[in-house]
Length: 118
Image 1 (cartoon, rainbow, N blue to C red):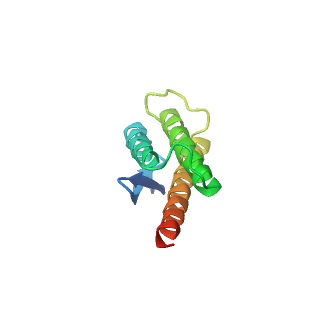
Image 2 (cartoon, rainbow, N blue to C red; image 1 turned 90 degrees about the vertical axis):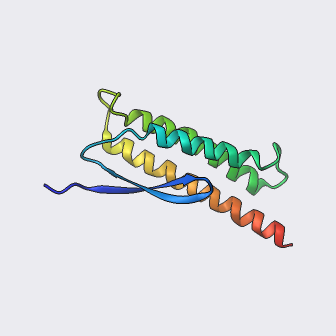
């Protein structure tokens, strides 16, 4: 029987990488989510605590909250969690969190690039 693989974007040291994991033999994504969370915190520190721009403020909020959600969802998918309620739902949530992190990072890059070019 073939294994099905999902690609999840991962933010690490400012670049978008892809994690490949098998849905038929779940791995622990907790260490990866912790590294993502650290990278997101380091990125957020680069911005003022109270940004003037609503776009920057919203993107930072999405970035940090998605990283926290990602960590929580990865803990649910952990092999140490004896019975996640619905592995497919957890997997979809992990994918959504990763997408939101990538989207927020892209928005921040776009906004700061525009600000720096003016």
